[in-house]
Image (cartoon, rainbow, N blue to C red; front, top):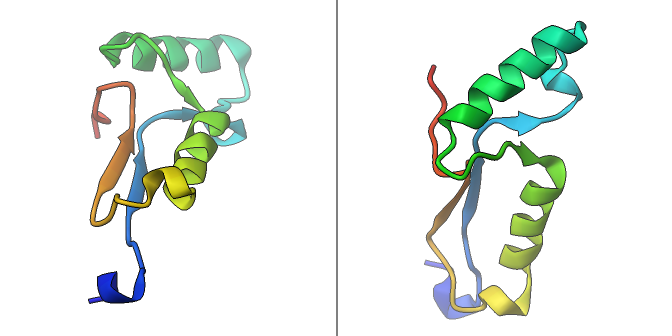
Length: 82
């Protein structure tokens, strides 16, 4: 509907992201959880907030001028197990 007005609509669907919210209060527990999630990632990485920000910046930029109606999944190739 908004395409003729130059409006693009996209979404960002992050997977597991290392943030203060994933901190378990115990460094050993936090690292164990992060390692478990890293092992589930085909790329072997956990996303960080900067990865999500870069995706949003791309979608908001002229580089994505022909991108609309997409969901950009920032998840290292994996899905969350819950």
